[in-house]
Image (cartoon, rainbow, N blue to C red; front, side, top):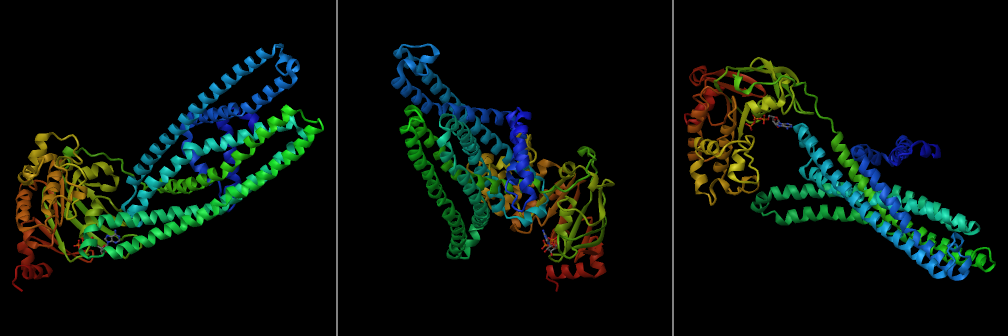
Length: 618
Ligand SMILES: Nc1ncnc2c1ncn2[C@@H]1O[C@H](COP(=O)(O)OP(=O)(O)OP(=O)(O)O)[C@@H](O)[C@H]1O
């Protein structure tokens, strides 16, 4: 270890080496105690310089902070030894001058201490801010790259608690935790060293409790770690419940389920409290226990040091310094408990954030860029098969051709896999077999970004963001001009109602657009797609949840915008798709019939029978 210290003159490298030794030691063991710290360390490589400076400022501040007891010792020394004092030996015999010099040194030390205190606080806090900011952004960016399947497995609340609570926890530790640890170590080295120099005979009694304090702290860490991991997990569950309930508030109210939800929330919240109490029970006992160990050192110094002073082995001035110093040495160790407490919480959080960052992103070999203006929109599904994770096959050996500029419709029973086809086209999921081509190119090889730019999806579940009407229409076409927004809204027959809103296009629509009606939301979504102007349009039950008037308006719009644009319409109401160029009938992941409306009626199969039911013939 000493060799490492001499070899790595840069303290940062030294810390890295120590961290690596510790992590290699512990990661090979079962407990992997320092593994999360290593993960954080690896992540923090880019803040090397700032970390180095902050460590330096912390250590220097502590050095100057430890000086006052020594200054008191010198003052006592001057008072007792006068012309033979330490300062007198430097050539200043006048006592007044000795005190003046001592005062000057005191002023310099205090000023430097303050300066370094300011520096380390600024440096650690800004480091904490930088890391929390970048970590949050990195985690969020990574999250956006993950497949939809990941979001189906993880609740929104749990993900929010990682992006918010866990990162804040880490910020709190970085704010002061590392500084505390560094300063405690500096104190032990400097003050412990001073004890051995000033009074080697009694130094052992003061140093004796330290290994026990450190051992106790590390043992505590082991006991606390699983309890804090449990606390973090319970926070995640509580947050999931809260976010789920807040988004489902209308359902809760309409089913008069407030009491039921109060109980469910209470049980999650109680689980969190219980988990926290288990951790608190253990952590609260730490300082009182350590205090007893400190007491041993303190009493030992009082007795042995006092006796050594009486017998003349130690000078009175040295004894007074030691009595001050022991407080400076042992009391900060009590903070170790609090710091390790914070450390444990922060490491539980680090693990969760790093796990998120380490979630593998699906490998896309999507290197072919598309010239969006040149895309014709010819689509072909070639013998595709697909199943969701751990589910039976949803699509089986399905083939489908859509000539460019044509409108096709897909109809079929619920759950037959219609929406799944759209998700596969947008590559939200990857195919098990077969391929889908756009303008003859396998979409697997296309740039994902370009592919999705080519497709305008309007579905039954419209999602509007909290913001203005204009913000929502321009979503995805962020540079659109005012005139273009209005044109799109007019084409979607949305302009009339927008102009009647209190602030027109600047009206805030509320979270998920809840201040608008379903039909209004749908028309804004349509305007958003019109503005995007994609070569392929996909309408997944776009009119199924709207009133007749809105449906008629949307139909009028579609007649205009689908001309010469490849369009896929998924619908249950057959009247809305009867004019499609081709209609495909889907059952249990397979296409069973296809043709024009008239041809399908002549075939007298599933479509004909559905038509008869819907038009009231049957
Ligand atoms: N994310 C998912 N994970 C697992 N299974 C899913 C998922 N999404 C859909 N499914 C299943 O896939 C099947 C097809 O669903 P899909 O949404 O494609 O049907 P659909 O024909 O569009 O139905 P509808 O007309 O009711 O909208 C259903 O059995 C459904 O339960």
